Image 1 (cartoon, rainbow, N blue to C red):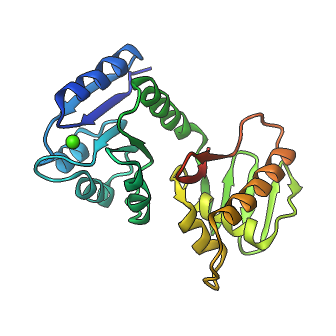
Image 2: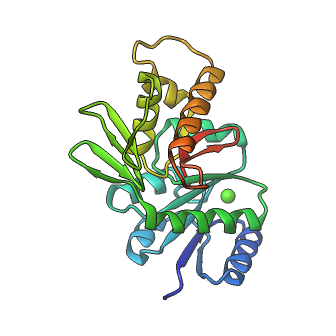
Length: 228
Ligand code: CA
């Protein structure tokens, strides 16, 4: 199989070099850009398998680049920021990035995230006629039911909406705020912990119905949740 091509967009060349070395060691092809100017067009043209995109760049910033790329391309993007509190804001902008990393991060962590995203390509959510299939999981919003391995899941309306929201944005991390907005359409004010407790129950029900050891929904520390 051909090597996956990873494109690093990072203006701090030392950081870029560190990322590059670890990714090369992990068996990827790697190229680098050190400036935001023209990066979006380059990404679309070069069509890498994954992009590691720094937020603060000279020329065009990561936010604008991500938006531009998403107009024409679904290439997986890992957004890199220098501040953890910025991730929530970025999530709120619905940029369409696939994952977020906060500096400083270990290159090992980066390699793990890259591999996880590339692996996901083979177990994607298939959506058809409003319904979604994800492995053994089938969710039908029209009939308001959800099956796992042919077994009907007994989900509460809130759990159903949470699962639907995650399935509609496969692989994307949703913040607690975004999940609250879909779960409580009457705009009732609830706390983060309420969402966590609904998610805990939902994950428990999925784990019981699935014979897969792998968790279907992953929790992203300090940020929110995503389909695994
Ligand atoms: Ca930077």
